[in-house]
Structures are given as C-alpha cells and as structure tokens.
Length: 393
Ligand SMILES: *Cc1c(COP(=O)(O)O)cnc(C)c1O
Image 1 (cartoon, rainbow, N blue to C red):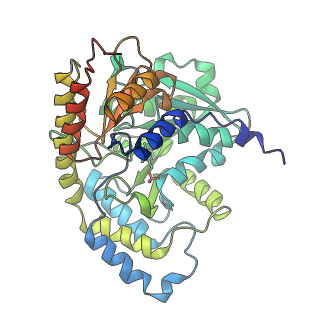
Image 2 (image 1 turned 120 degrees about the vertical axis):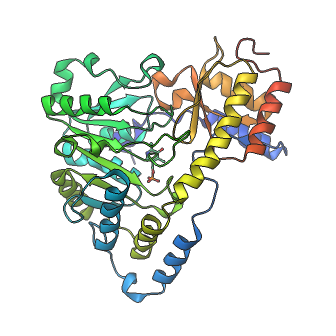
Image 3 (image 1 turned 135 degrees about the vertical axis):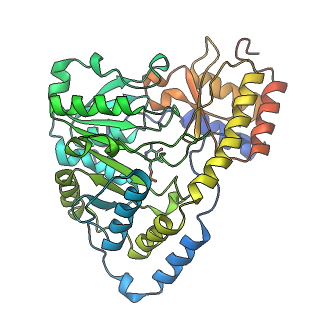
C-alpha cells in the first residue's frame, strides 16, 4: 500500500548511521558515555509520584478525562504563572492541558495553517515546529539563529511578503539546542512584529526553570501585549523531571486556546486525571525543585565548559537550559566530528545539523549525566588528541 506523502516526505533521520555505530560499539562491550540525550536523569520528585499513586486508586479518575483538562490542573498552572511570572491567567479560558508540550506544538498548526501557508521557524530549532507545519500542509520559512546575534532571529531580515503570509512564529527561549536566552527587548520587538503582520507567536518555554548564575528566565506573556498575539507552551518534563509522564500546557491567547482545544477534542481525549493531579502536586508543592536541579546542571555545565576550554575551545557558558552548544573544529562537519568522538573516545554528542542547516558546524552536549562521567568523557577526548584547533584524524 502506497503511504501518504506526509510520511514518505518526512525529512530523513540524520542520526541513523551514528546510532548504528553506537549500537555496534555497545555490543562489543565499549563503555559509551552519551552526552547526547536531552532527558533529565534524576527521578520525578517523590511527592509527585505519591500523589499519582493515590489518585490512580480513585475510580473517579478511571473515566475519560475532559479534553480541555482538569479544572484543578488548569488552576494550578494559572496560580503557578501568577507566582512565578506575575502573569494573571483565566484558568478556564486561557489554559489547556496537553499530553506533553510536544503534542500541542505539533497540533497548533492544524488550528491556523491551510495548505500553502507559511510558518516562521527558528533554525537551528526543535524539529517539531517544522514537522507540525508540514503535517498541516504548510511550509516553514527558516529564521537563522546566528551566534553573532546571540542566537536571536533578525526580525528585520524577514521579507515583508513572507511575514504577511505567515500564520505562526515559533520561538523558544531559553533555547534548545543553543542554550541562548532572550532579553525582554527582543520579546517586545516580537509583539510589535506579530501585531503588524497579524500572526500568532508560539513561544516554547520548556526551559524557563533551568537557569544559572542567578539568571531567571521570563515568560513571553510578561511582555506587554503578548497575550493579544501569542501563546506559551509549558511543560512539566524538564522542570520536574517528568518527561515520561506526558503532561504540559498551552496558555495565553483565549482564541488560540479554544482552537487547540477544539482540535484536541477531535483527536485525543486528554490526560489521565491521576497524572494531572500529579502535575498539580508538582506545581503547588515542588517550587524548590527546579532551583535544586539548576544548581546540579550548573555544576555539570561548569565541568563541560572547563573540559572544552582545556581542549582549546573558546566558549562562553550558557545561562540556561540543559545544553552546551559549541562549534566543531574547523573543517569538520558536525556529523563527521560526532562520529570521530564516538570512534576515538566512545563519547556521544549530537551533531548540530540535526536541528537544521544553521546547526551545521556545531554540536550539542547535554547536561543529563553526572559530573564524574563528564570528566571521564573529557579525559578520554584529551587522551584521543581531540583539540579544537588540531584534531587528530
Ligand atoms: C523537551 C522539549 C519539549 C517537549 O517537552 P514535552 O512536554 O515532554 O513534550 C518541547 N520543546 C523543547 C524545546 C524541548 O526541548
């Protein structure tokens, strides 16, 4: 049976060859250190797990949940936004529960994009922005995130006919994969741009709670006027080590919240209520948890930066997220460099090209492994003669 073009035309999976080499090395008993996986290694807080167990025993939670989300969860999200950002949200009209934020990010294009429409998508960026656009029949216009601009898109470089045709603009700060943060002035420019061209800003805020050296990330919705032109995706995944639970939310513009709710009621039936109650426990009782995790990630970040600098990299530490984004040695593609580290040292990093063409020439190190493993990884790279300026081939 011939498959649909939306499946056969998916971009090729870029890491198949590297994955094959990792599997092969593991089979031969090589101790692989993976700095590639962006999935918190620490467990979900105990109070959250306990609440989930307790609620799972209640038969009232064994029924279909409501598609827009449990009122208690949406209220907990609204209360958390007020405490954390000083942003007032109407839990009923301005919050929708998601099966993880990825689900909402993938589906929001179905609400706004008709075949032939354009979305503005950051490059490099989280691949789901582009895939969601594509599944809705739209086309992505790539906004380059360049190092010399602090990995913020240059809004003035977007041609006005493109901006006029665009329906959505995806942004993500603190950023995956670059670790960049956005100053409030940038968000103000984004609001003005979105107003002028009548487009919806979709801010992916997966990493607002992981900050270093005292940095505290803002919400896009703190920007004056943001609610008129935008929504924000929030996730409990990185904030509370809950990637496996599949829970998040989209908040902000009420029309967009209603539209996504309408799409979702036709596709899924919401999140198991016991998990939504676990989310309530996380948002209400675990306010210190992200700070504790940030301190841990900061130690790991420092170990990575120290390791890179010892090998000749000149690099500034990121102020947020769980990633370090670094240039590859001159003359090597990101895939070639990642393959070299794997073969010479049993160390896995993610080639930047996996996040878009502008990611070529960079690689991403994730902070989801212990400091001792990070040190071991860099000791191996040193022994293998890996240096920024003179890679041993
Ligand atoms: C991890 C991640 C997400 C997905 O989070 P879930 O809530 O687990 O779906 C969204 N955006 C970015 C940039 C991420 O890195």
